[in-house]
Length: 116
Length: 411
Image (cartoon, rainbow over all chains, first blue to last red; front, side, top):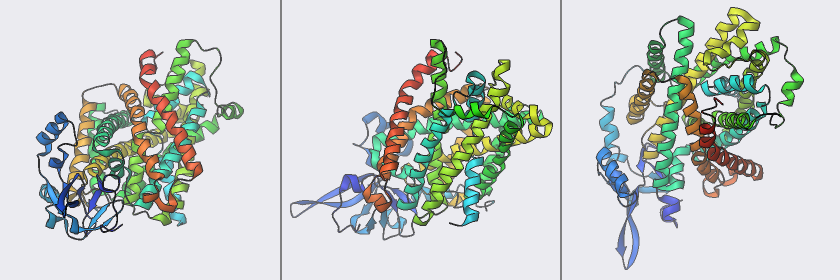
């Protein structure tokens, strides 16, 4: 399914995994951001990151998430989406949308040797 | 289908089928109730065949493992509940497997169990770090085939085959007191839980992605699930039957993982004993790896991180940290000195509670026209799937009352 097609936002997009153009996992569609255009609501961006859990979790659970993982949110513009199926596939690299940062940071902590 | 891939897939499924809980409950079921619980093993094996096949099919067609899609189907809140519940259940199971392997190493070497738990954890962490997914799965699965010695030992003692065959018919032994009936029911629920552990579908479906399955691999998936799990279940039934034949007349209760190897030593001597211990060691170590990786898969997939051991550990760094941390946590649980048999009991109890949360999204996804297209569930898969879902709901509802009423199967 292309982003221009009719998309059921909750059943078809929310909580889907996101893959970048190189098919690297780079988050989950944690929430959606809308904008008003000519009196109509349109999806502006996918919201990715623990900060987007606000309003989706009970207050105490969000407090816990915020203590553990922070409140970071990355915005993936709607026009960066190439396809929507069992994952939302981007037409850009994860880094251009501010994704994959924690992954890259943790990678530096892991020894790069010894594996077949 | 590549015949070599198929054979290796089946053998790996056979060698990886039995874990510490099945070993313990099969031996205890045989010594307590003769052949009367064989049908529960057969019944639960059909259940894991149905659910395993679905999870592999979803991985091959939707190209996403089960936990990636669980959150999409259940939503963030219920998905998070499922994640936390399965993490706890798999962690306890992993600790039970580590403890069980440590006991077997202790029997083989005479070294202290706690030291062996540390050695065992170090070896499995090193092997996951060094070996790619296929090698990990094949190494432990194929070495677990030493467990076939249990089937050979059963043939050697020439059991009453007619009685064993009758055990396949659903039954409740006559003349049991109420307390004994409750204990029989507890064993039934525990066997269903041990055969259908939630980690198995998480690991199996993620393994399909690790091995880059596509729709062309659907026949391989189906044959591996049906033939591999059926043959693996025969090993568990062999353990139960030998126990019924050898331990029941002596009123022996083989509670420790090491007790079951006497089933092999009696007819086959020291060589049989050694092969049985090695078989249990590799099967249980393999199960420890599966439970730990299943947990790491679940966390990484729930949050959309890079994952998989087809990648180098530093290419999926958060996934790597999670599986190492979980192994160390499982080791820490064992090092507290908690009785391994208690861990086994808690593992089956928690797992049966998580089973409905695991299998509901699986059934919904496998029937989903949008994701699965022409490969979605047919009438048979749907019928069997929903039937087993009702069974596990009943088992989950009965688990805690039965556990309390029988003091964890002690009677």
